[in-house]
Length: 223
Length: 371
Image 1 (cartoon, one colour):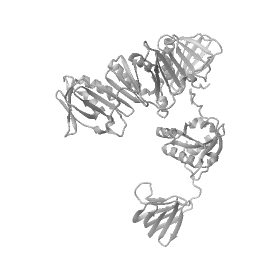
Image 2 (cartoon, rainbow over the protein chains, first blue to last red; image 1 turned 90 degrees about the vertical axis):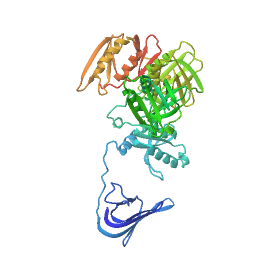
Image 3 (cartoon, rainbow over the protein chains, first blue to last red; image 1 turned 60 degrees about the vertical axis):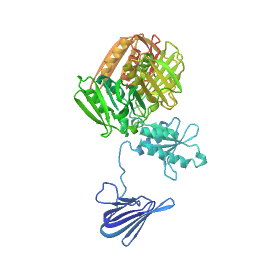
Image 4 (cartoon, each protein chain N blue to C red; image 1 turned 60 degrees about the horizontal axis):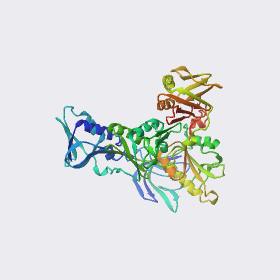
């Protein structure tokens, strides 16, 4: 992690243009290529930033951060007029935020018990890769149909859109042209459920305590 | 717009119509009541875009017009008016963008809401129009409504499936934990028929409107995605719920291990009493032995209770647990008289029916008992 406190001007160009006039700011460069520019006010959000994968080039008084965004390139030009502090720290392995009910835990439990996502489901693979990111679980059913499962703690409309994007990419492969989608979450927002069902996705609410075996599932007349 | 009406009439109609006004919408006009005055009729209207209600108001109209006023505020004002005042007048003051409300010496000026944001409400009629006896219709609603789900994450279950044709009126409601079916035989056959999943909330509102109007019939107009009820001058409309309602016939078990005829009142009293000790989601335990049923409940740190009653049970003893509220709802809907309690096993649904074939069936899923 490199932390630079400097008087700098920051110019962003790419899909749009933005200029931060010269002022004293904190520039944070992480080992994964993330770059954030913070002011001393304005809350927790950086004034400007670039997420990885980035290419960082440094010259005298200039830090340039570049990133491909489709056909275009996003670029952050940081002109440094005066450096007040420039330190680097080896942070080591990051400790992940521990939170009960976190999605990774849900994914683990559902990977072990995929039938909670649908009757007859069997797990093929966790983190099934697509060119826009991994699908949480890829399963097959009794008829060998493919099912992509997206897992959230709380499923919102964004989760529905995300799953739809994954399905679009997956269906480009003729072997997976009929892949279906299931949105599994501890709770599903009503609007997300309406959108999901209108797009042909199935919604499944899962109870963490039941998945962990801490409680028996409630008996119901129908699913 | 300028009109005058009796304070009591205004209050009564406002109490009815303001229940339908929205309390959560970003569109302020939906939290309002539209007062529409013409030479021939005055109407109060409210809607939350799902359910809408129009009720008549007996009034003298000095000047026609339409205005939208905050429902809750207008109701509070109407409630607070001096009882000594014979009448209350409402007059729109366009330049001040308010309505002057005068009763006796009391005078209020209420700012109006944007009238153009208040939507037109559905007119009576429909693709299918059926007239049903009001009493039978609302009694049937009352019998099943408690079983409808309140969970908006499963919208289909928040409705009541209403079927009317020939001489039969049938309503079905379920929240997946219990299912109520009420079949009412009508005195005369209906002209026409329909089947629709109507939001339980709208039907509960209809019950209130029938109660306040004393109407004897309800004229029901059904469209593709909407139903309109005309009741004694009032018009209630609601969107219909899309989607496939659960096939309740498939859920009813064909065979039972035990069938017991029990005095409904007696069982209902015991259940109500012992349920006091079934708190914090504790189940009500029904333990069947030779000739006897013991109803018991226990809540840690609160206490326990049990009470036996004689029942014609024979066979291997077994225990089954139920949600006390759900069991009480089913017993209450049966009412007085004997009931049939049909059971299979501790993890299969139980069935409660009126023994005199009153047309009511209640299927209730048990709760697992911790041994």
